[in-house]
Image 1 (cartoon, helix red, strand yellow):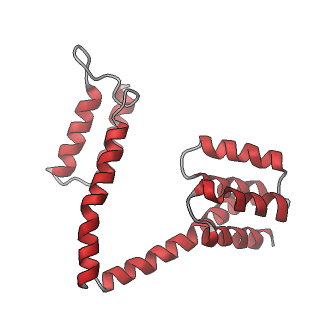
Image 2 (cartoon, helix red, strand yellow):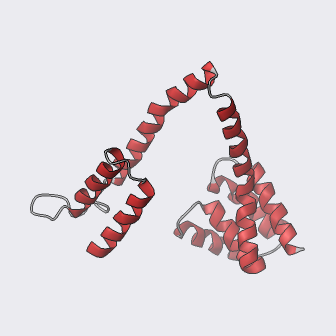
Image 3 (cartoon, one colour):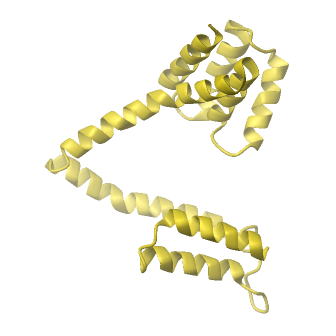
Length: 179
């Protein structure tokens, strides 16, 4: 019965939650602390702090942690899946619609207009990541390994058409071995 409740609660949050993980906090708190009393407000505050420190969206981390606390590993898997299920279904429907109507003038124009915007957002994120913490070895008289790894990865994707996932993995291994 607890698994059904976890599923219902997190599907509801996944459907009604809008604006990202922090926007969902009040909904999650209401369901977990006030409505179902699965944990105390203090436990929830601790859970939020832990969710902020771990990688990934805070709402998914909260769902995983809550599910684990209430129903073990099965509860964590079910809670996490239930939270993302509405988004996955909506994405599937939108993609199916876009693929079906990809020759429509309005859709073609919209998608072609979005390409430079998305490229700009990705470039902006890349520039923001080029900071002292990520490229601390850059400069005259330094080894510049970070720049070399970045350049090789770029060349592999852009010129050699290597799958980016393999290059991310190889870059991670290289960074781990070097540093």
